[in-house]
Image (cartoon, rainbow, N blue to C red; front, side):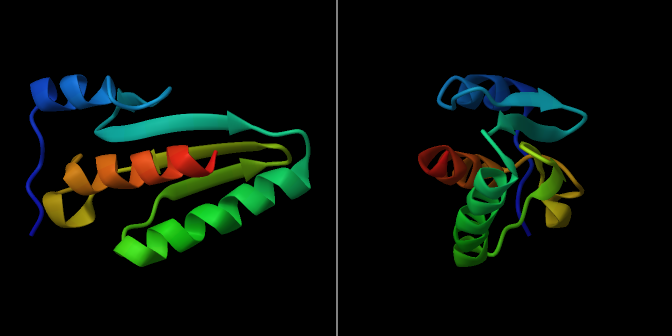
Length: 94
């Protein structure tokens, strides 16, 4: 089982990421692309990262916009190191 991070740990680790925020027990980030095809390409690329670590984001897509939310189910829906690891991997794709 994963261990939830404290609010202080989350705030500190957010400084290591680009544009992510903490809201409602999730790490969240919005992305905007030139068109739908680019948004879908991005989602396909991050799917490989998510599968590699067996940790999957909640995804919302509308045309060229993608919103991602990360938390860890086996930590009671709280943010863990796994979420920061995936967020960092996603940042390398975007």
